[in-house]
Length: 298
Figure 1 (cartoon, rainbow, N blue to C red):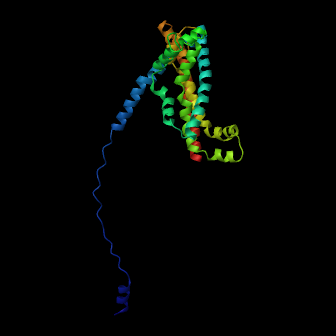
Figure 2: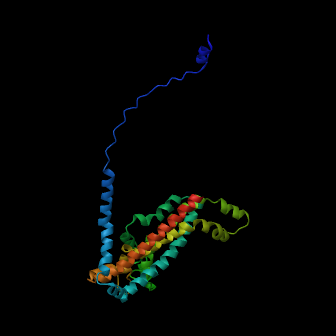
């Protein structure tokens, strides 16, 4: 065997095969289903939300800023605004305390009736506000269960501020508890138990460990509670009597002014409520971003 034959024999031979490209499928035609669905959603929101909201601002300012400001100085409007602030200032702290206690009991303890307690807390979500107001009337009204005793002691609940506070507190009851319970369950109780073994007292554990961990959820619940308290109509209208200057909140003032053909005053009050809603949405978005950023860091 010659050297050339040996070299050719020792060198590896690579066989290259050429493959024909597979038949490529033709590009699919662009689907118009997403575009149609988005268009339907935008049109629905425009009819239900955007156009009515724009119309409220247009009607309130169509004659200028001067009439709008003068409407806000009306005695009935001022009284309704004060009443709304009073209801929120009482109902929000009450439900904050209740929500924290209920959330602590549910998230930290297993006890008989725990599921029932959760269902009772969620009750205002499922009951109509008008029905809630009627329940309060049937309890504390003149012919209600406690009506006779209240009359004997000259205590007025229905068609007075106490009944409005009860109705507002009822419809705003679930928000703080429902926002704090998941947060308590998420971060667990290891830190609290460690602090307890080191000699920390209950209030020290709450202020230094529990509250910092639940602060964003608590603030979120407070914002939702305050927004619902200021915008509640159904339950408050049943128990208040809608007496102008006495038992009338801002939502009730809007309805009463519109019925009395004082449309500019009604739209002016509606603008204030709408601005409160916008502020609530902005604060809600800020808190959601903060809680989202915190969860990513952890």
